[in-house]
Every structure is written in C-alpha cells, then in structure tokens.
Length: 177
Length: 183
Image (cartoon, rainbow over all chains, first blue to last red):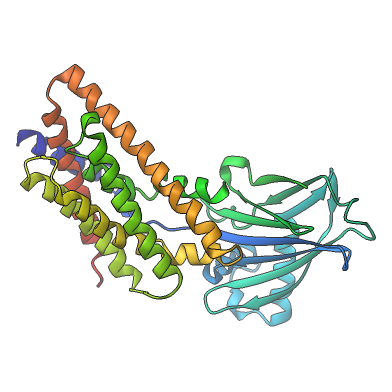
C-alpha cells in the first residue's frame, strides 16, 4: 500500500512541476491525404490534397501579411491566390531529379474537409518515359503543427504506392515505378 | 506495409499515451510465464478496437468524441481498479474486459481512420492497420514484461513496482477523467 501512495505522490509531484504534460492527454491528429495521379492523356500529374478546414484556415491566417485581416474575410479570388502561394512553396515534385512546377487550380469543400487541386505539367511523354524515381516533398501544415503527417498515395500506370511525409523523414519521399 | 506501420505508430505514439497507459494498466498482473494470457488479453483488445474502428469509420456508430475520450480515460482507471480488487491475480474476466474496453478505444480513432482511408480501399487498409496495432501492442507489452522481470531480479519486490505503477495509473487516469468531463 505504501508503494501505491508513492506512485500517487510521485505523479502528483510531477504534475505540479509540469502541468502542461497532463493537458496533452487528448490525442489530436494532424494529418492530410494527397493523391498524385500521373495522367498521360493530360500530360500532367494531377494532385488532390485533402485536409481539415480548421487546420487549413490556421495556416492561411499565418500566411496573411496584414495581420488584422482574417482568412474567412477574404473574397474567393483572394483565397485562391493565397492557396496557390502556399501550395507552390509546400509541395515539391520531381522525376529523376528534374523538378516539375506545381500549379494550383482550385478548391472544393466537403462537409468536414477541404480539397485543394493542383497540377504539375511534364509536357509530352510516354508512360515509359515517366518511369523512374518520383520525389515528393510535402511540408503542408508542418510549419504550424510539428506532428503533422501528410499521407501520399501515388498512382502511376495502374499501380499505387502509399507512404507519408512526416518529421521522421524530413517530409520527403521517393516512389519508384 | 504503410498501414501496418501506421498501426504500430498509433500504439507507440508517446504524444497520445492513452493506449500505452491502458496497456500498462492491463498488464500489471502479468509476467513472461503468463504469455498465453498476455496474448489473449491484447488480442481481445485488438478485436474490440478493430470492430468499433470499422463501425465508427463507416458511420454506423458516431458517438460524440468528448464522451469517447471520457470513456477511454474511465477504461484506464477501471482496469487499474479491476486488478487492485483482484489482488493482481491473472483473472479470466480480464480478457472480456480488454475486449469491451477495446471497443471504446476503437471509437476514438474512427474519424481519423475514416479521413485517411477514403482515398485507399477501406478494407485493404483496415486489415494491415489492425495487424499493426496488434504488433505494436505486443512490442509495448514485451518491453513492459521485460521491465517487470528485470525489477524482480534486481529489487526482488515486483509487487512494490506494480503498486507504484498502479498509483501512477490511477492518478493520471483520474486527471484525464476530470480534464475530459463534458462541461
């Protein structure tokens, strides 16, 4: 019984010294899911990022230069410009070392999620020429949430590979097709 | 393999230590000689967790997350108290308790799983994810049993350690319950 008391007192003592430790008991997940699809007909990689609207809003507010302005107050066009600016600096894609330019082209909203759409043109190429090592760097929301995990599903010629960009791999992935 | 690893990370993530604390509470009476009971208890937990995770992710059940979080905290305290009142004996009822409590823990992860599995095939991801959870639990429990065994060899008072751990579990879970009471 005395050991039970020691355990109780030890934990209470620990709590007094660092109360923040015990407020983090709820498990919050910071996650996004991105589909990359190599579309030979379009000559581009099309991408869809799915994320939580509240996480996204926080990232957009942090990006706004005029701090009195809030993301929710922006017009549709201004929001689009902000989305594009953010995506172009947080999504990187390359094939066999050659970077592809990311272009944002729209947003869709679901009941509990937001979808950001983008493309990366590679010009005319056969599916054979699109084989090799695809490198993805996806730092989306990592500047806001250190535990952010960005799941990537890469579709290529009927094949699919899944992995995640996270702190443990410096938000960088390689897919080989 | 990705979803298998994700399952392992879900269990071993120190930032959301609810699962770890539950496993600590569950394994208090166990040692390496009880390996069969260990396997049964954690498998029962995984089965319960997998079922409710699927039901929540498919929107068959959708209890308010604040109540699920409170429920998870209560399961940790209840598991500690169960062993306390059983005198740290390896009681048969613990397997059923683990299964039922696994149902509550699985609900806590349903919305997350629903979010991540929408793009991939639901069941294609569900099976390796839950196998990863089982593997993660086995890893955590093996470490715990090794610690209990080591302390027994050095201190020769394994009950002392378990009483202390029970104190930690009850204090932390009480704090969690108070934190999570819906206001």
